[in-house]
Length: 324
Image 1 (cartoon, helix red, strand yellow):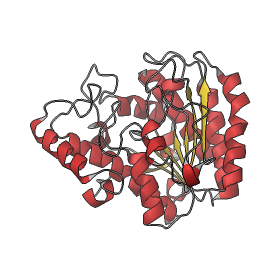
Image 2 (cartoon, rainbow, N blue to C red):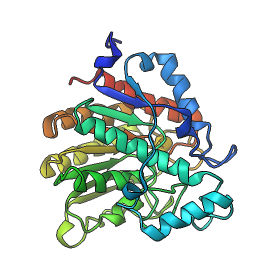
Image 3 (cartoon, rainbow, N blue to C red):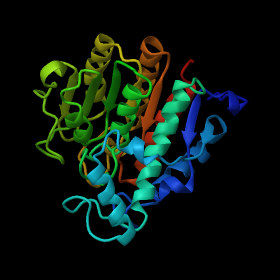
């Protein structure tokens, strides 16, 4: 395996810092604060930290968070962040002291990656603790407080005046917070391969959900059966490529939740690292073809620590090996 000799020249930014690990709901919770270090140990073991340009986390301005989230909800998170009491949804996402700052760091780090890519400081980036795709505009959901994916999409459309942003999601769970927020927005090209909602939270993302009104046909949902393996993933993947080519995005976001790997404690999928490598390699090629290489990966879910280390490093490795 070859790596660039001078990491400053790397076309790939990798975000790491203890501030990111503060987003987690206590040891013992599936989304615990130990997830980042489980990934980082694997990155160091493979020497990938020597090949990427390692960048520090950043904190989002509240005005940027409000590009996606309602002011009332942002205020509620702030208030519960001070007391550390109660839940931010119906019971999956507990408040804790400092949760506002932790969630703002996830959003800010994702936006920092967007800015670096748009400024051509790098072509591709990976933010491991990110991709919080269940949060709605006005509430938390499924371990997700602020939806950094949704904020990044609004940011690209509003600040950079892009006309088409693609969001690709291979997390085992459907990216419902992103899907329904932009269901009627034709600027958001949405493609999601996930475990069939009949078997897994949040129960959405059916084939018939293709967007509404002016956005009809700009959304692709590919429900996969429980136990789906690499061969089925590779068989269905060309639908995503054809879909992206048809809509010609100017920026591609990848939510690469590692909970689709075999052995996750809360899902039923059976992919190996090969599926993640395939998705990342193909998206690098598509980004080079369609949008000047602009590709940002967000770690998303994954509750088996070994799996998230393997899945995310497979994505990072593919990003490092891809041509500029």
